[in-house]
Structure formats: C-alpha cells, structure tokens
Length: 221
Image (tube, rainbow, N blue to C red; front, side, top):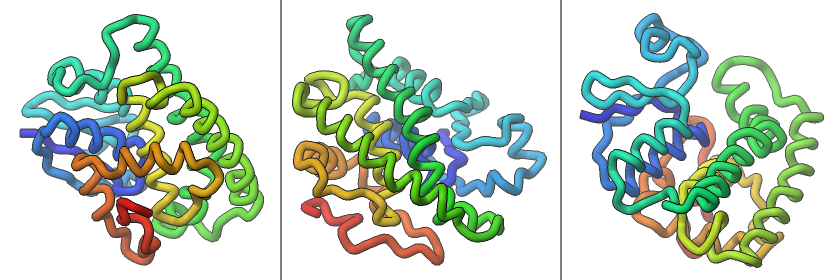
C-alpha cells in the first residue's frame, strides 16, 4: 500500500506524484495541512514538511530522495540516466528548480498569493511578488536556452529534471503566473509533458477559493 501525504499545489509533492504516476504506481493521496502539524504527522516527518511517502511500513521524506528511490526500485520507465555524467546533469537541474527557482520564484509568487491566505498569514508582500514576477523571466529564458540545445531539459531523454521543472511551473500556472508566450520552445516542451497521462491528476486539482485559469487543463493551451 502506498500513501502520499501532500499539499496539492506544493511543487515538491507534485514531483513525487508525477513520478508515481509515470511508474504506474497506485497511491492514496492524503491532503496534509503541514502548517498545522499534528503529532502523527510530526512522527512521520519531524521536519514538518511534505511530501511524506509511506510504502507499507516504510516512511520517506524529501522529494528528490523519494523520486530517486522510486526510480531505482521501479526502473521502468527510467527517469534517471545510466551514465554518471548524465545523472549529474539531471540532479543539477533538479537542484536548480528545487533550490534556486523555488527561492527566487515559487516562494515569491505561489506562497505569497496562495499559501499566505490558506495559512491565515495575511496579505501578499508586493515586493516579493514583484521580485518573483521579474525573476521568472530569467528562468524561462534559461529553460529556452537549454531546449534550444536538447530535446528535453537534461538531454535527449525525458528525465526527473523535466518533472521537477514541470512541477514548479504547473503550480505557478495554476495561478496564471507563467508567460508561455515568452519562449515557444518552453511552451512546446510543457505542452508535451502536460499531455502525458501522469499529469492528469495534477490538472484535475482544485484548491478552494482559487479556481485555475481556463488554459490550465487545456492540453493544447
């Protein structure tokens, strides 16, 4: 039995959900209000963060570690390359999005516009929103530069790097914070990845009080 404790708009949870779905592993999703941690949740992860994945009696945390475990224990389809240099590039890009992009963009847009309201932490900080709106342009340009040289973000095969980037961008797309017209290459890449069956549950997400834009679940934009 597989159970994922998650928050629907968390890009880290979405990365794990995409990996599980790509591996065709059935999972029970449990929405977790991690900002109001219960003793049970803190026993599962003393860090008080989502995602937390429970497989039978095994409990795991940290999205990158979870995804690599799933890929190693369920090797088809592979999301990590066999070559050491190629694996390095996938991990580098995963870290880029989970660290740099998250700090500069996701936390400044999604957390300010949505999480603060849900968590009862007040109104968005306009300086943070402005900063995130400016920095996402740089990151979209970087994605476009990568895709001008490669079929997928880390090389010629789809990998965990693509799911990591798509997890962050899909969370921001839910609140219309991605300018898909800035780079045709990025738009085409995202259209390809969001058309995959593994993306369906993400596109069906609904957060009370925050309806997604019409294009969010449109596979053709």
